[in-house]
Length: 190
Ligand SMILES: C[S@@+](CC[C@H](N)C(=O)[O-])C[C@H]1O[C@@H](n2cnc3c(N)ncnc32)[C@H](O)[C@@H]1O
Image 1: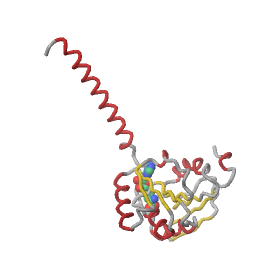
Image 2: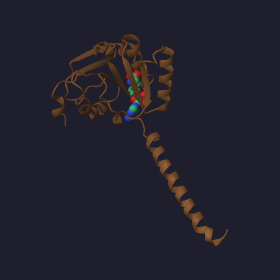
Image 3: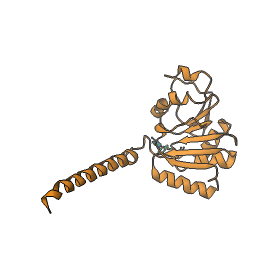
Image 4: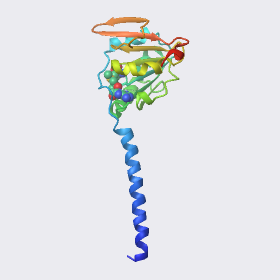
């Protein structure tokens, strides 16, 4: 290779390497974030009770944070006519939930997206459903308390620390908690 071309080729290789490193770093950000909690489905009778306690109707927008196979959003659409969004960090769960929504004939009302629930804008939701872990509920609490007054939050099995629930109902071996966001909570949330 002509001596004059060598520095140019070296520069090209360097630029390509940096580009690839950037792309890999971006991919790592989206694919290597581990789930904060493993997948365990909510039993269907508990799903029904959660949606009943939240008084879900066809004017609601239900967000299931960590949506697994999609049973909560799908039931919200099928049984209550609500629009619903499921967010899950695991792409396998998102694919499975999309297949289940198709099978249930609710793809006009329900969507599933891959994402981190802690990075998701929840401001459109009128109902939030959770089956996470106590520490994750506590981490979410200040975000949830800043949602629109009247937004209902239902959680399978886990409470929200010092935020007292409006209602607690036992279903078999599960407990369902309901909270309602009230006016002025945003100003007291840390
Ligand atoms: C216990 S399962 C609940 C599934 C479903 N909500 C239900 O009740 O049947 C928790 C789900 O949260 C998902 N998950 C864990 N960490 C997450 C995160 N940071 N963002 C979004 N989803 C997450 C897991 O992949 C899993 O599907």
